[in-house]
Image (tube, rainbow, N blue to C red; front, side):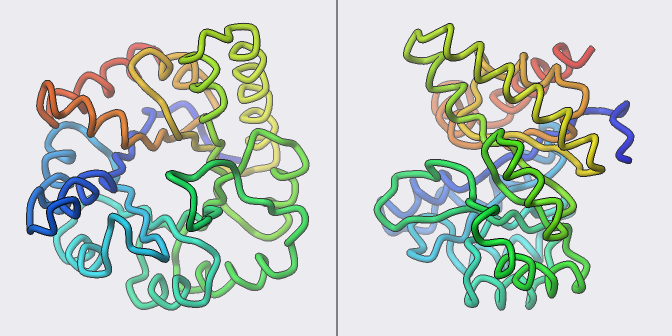
Length: 250
C-alpha cells in the first residue's frame, strides 16, 4: 500500500510551450528550457505528451528531454504500437496511457479500460518489464479503476477536467458532486494498492480541493501554468501553484 503521508508532487506538463513554438515553426520557445526552469521552480517531474499527429511535442523533444532532464519524465502516449516502441527505446521513468482522437483539441476524457482489458494488459506488460511505471488516465469511475488494477497498472491518474469545467461554468452543484466523486475514487484506488495521481484543467482556483485529498500523490498541470507564464513568467507561475498545493495539503 502506498504511503501517502509525504509531499504532494507537482508534474509540469510542457506540451504547450511546444504549441507556441510550432505556431511559428521556429526553435523557440524551447520545451527543454521550460523543463529546466520548472525544476528550478519546484516541480517534481516533467510531463510531455507525444501525440500521433505531433501537434506539439516532437520526437526530437523527447530525445532532448531524456538527455537533459534530471527530473523524472512522465511520457504521455496513446496505446499504439508506434508509441510503445518509442517508450521502450527511451525507457522513461513513467508512461501514462491516455485516449487520443485526432480531431480533439485536448484529451477529452479518461481511457476506456474496462472494455479493452485484454489488449491493454498485453500492451503495458513490456513497458512494466522495461522498468517504466505505468499510469492509466481515467475518469473517476469505479469500474475503470478496477479494470486498471486488473491489467497491472501501478498508477491511476484521475481526470479532473469535468470538475474544472463545472467550476468555470458556474455549475457549482455539479462541480461539488464531481469533486466528491474524485475524492471517493481516489480513496478507492488507494485501497486497491494503486498510486493515485490527478490532473487536467486544474487552475489556481480549482487546485486546492484536489490537492487536499490525502491519497493523491501527484498532480500533473500544464496548460494553465503555461498560460499564466505569459503574464507573470514561468518560474513564478509554477511557484504559485506549488504554494497552493502545499497550503492545501498542510
